[in-house]
Image (cartoon, rainbow, N blue to C red; front, side):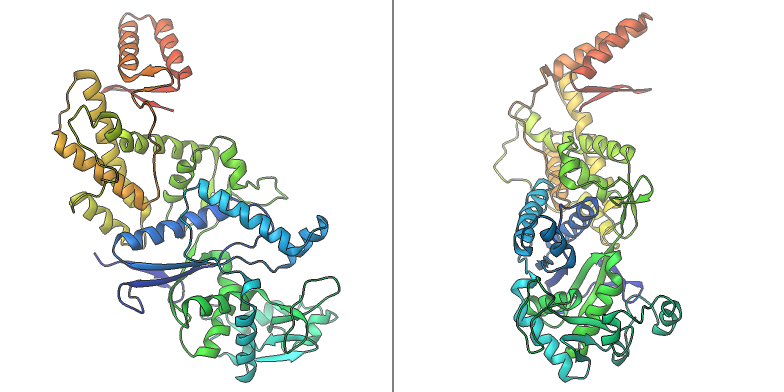
Length: 484
């Protein structure tokens, strides 16, 4: 059951082998803090949160670093509009980030470096690039000489010759920045200060760093020359991650990361999410509409993490129904444990190794196949739900209490790996005014009405239960129900 990952750098799936046995150094390119986080951020943060959890589950010691980009033109523009400062804007949206992620159940990273707090490391890296002939100053700016790095393009698969052909008719030779460069492909490592902008002193004059150099410096400062996993959205492959490789590896002569992992983008009703299209949804807007955070997690996990995912009302409704199924299974022990004679100790969820755990791990080990792993959870949850209904209706279960306890503990453990957690109700046997027994009695009344062809009464009972938050599902095997 060897873990294998698709590596963007090599374009193939490879066995996972860390620099240091048993330990994982992982870096995620985090958010630029100029606005509230949106659905794309939700997907990325959930994906990397679950991957980190899974690596810990299979025995790795994980050091997980996620940065904040707090120097950026978008932050400066917002500060100008609000008559504020870049620092104030960044602090406000970093605070909002933690609020949103807490609602989604995202575990905090081990450290959150910020570009403004890494200025010494940034300047040191630029200085080393300059000394090695990979960077040059120009009128207060410093640029990276792309053609000096022979492997440029190895991550994205782009060749400078091909890009040159497409770029020649888009270059504005009157652009002052273009005139400062020795080559159109060169990119800024340091930008000279403009009037009214925040600036830091440097050997090249007052200014601020470019975006790409910030991450190279933060990775090196917090995790060293070579890390195990460098993660981010697919939109960062070029130019951001490509430029990170060029900067870091030109100085160290070592691979920046052994594995490059990228999550797919989020579309909304088949279209790219953007404010101009009016389909831009923030995490807090979505959750404030009443969507369960666990349904959002489940929605994200039902798609392979590298593929695009389409956010639709139908998709989130399906994820909500799926979460209700898993939630019923997770609450089984708290609802029926005493009736089954269980003695539950706080935190007693970890099962011994069994076929379900092994099957889950074997599936997920194939490039973090969480959609496949979810099938194991649904099987366990549905079986527990069925046994719960039998217990309510007949006063006993078909499966032995010890086996049910083992199944429940397995479900709780595997759900925890995916960050799916159900809140324990204060009175789990009586929610929305109706107990399980009362619901079963009304379903029996409805069945009798249907057998007597009194369909108006049958519909009335169904609507009454729906108003109480109870959904009925009719099938050839009878009528099932779940709480909304």
